[in-house]
Length: 206
Length: 81
View 1 (cartoon, chains in turn blue, cyan):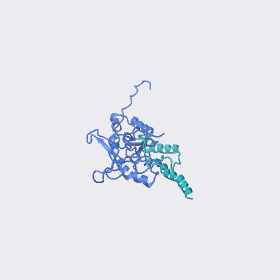
View 2 (tube, chains in turn red, purple):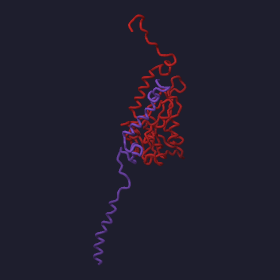
View 3 (cartoon, one colour):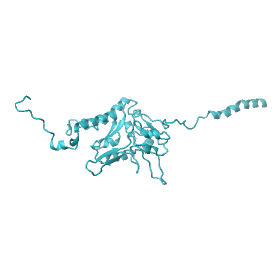
View 4 (cartoon, rainbow over the protein chains, first blue to last red):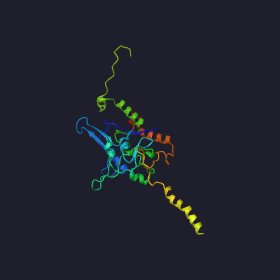
């Protein structure tokens, strides 16, 4: 059984924000709500690293644990979703989430906090698949079409991987083994060639 | 006649009064820690996959491989990375 996960390769992320744009465009996310964003550590300093962050669809999700109205549920394929008709916008999930995934529309007056919105892994919500209500409340349901989240599929460097946890872990493992470590990662080997193999001693056995 | 009417009323009135007790509660009983919202359908329960979970999993896995350059590019111009 598939268990959907995201994995971001900090060695590949170039902070292009393509994932953020893809998410916004696919799900018509309103202004001020960022289901996905790119975080950069040591910005401008040699060795800076960027990582794309959204809901990580935790196996043991703290948002589910703290919700006072129990509007969260986890699908069979491990995606954490919620029912917006039930959400009261209390913000407990925002404080519980270690990734800052829950977002609240704040376009009303007097500090109004609307119903929570977060990454759905492009799996919609508890409305009929592909319906107008689902699109309006939760965004597109790409998973029901056999597709993966648009952020991962649109990533230009394929830093952001999305899909079944085992499959993307295999992809990442292969990648790390091929590219090596240290200076090999950023191209020293490509630029100056790999160390030559030891030559057999003349006259010696090959 | 009047006695019959009275007897009839005596028989029907308790039933009419008790009918209110048979009402279903308009709200769902809250169970702590249990999802209270609407049920969702599974991603393979639709026209495209017709309830075939295996077909859906295969579709998603093959889609995931499009993120793997070592498979996607193969022996093409950008292959053999």
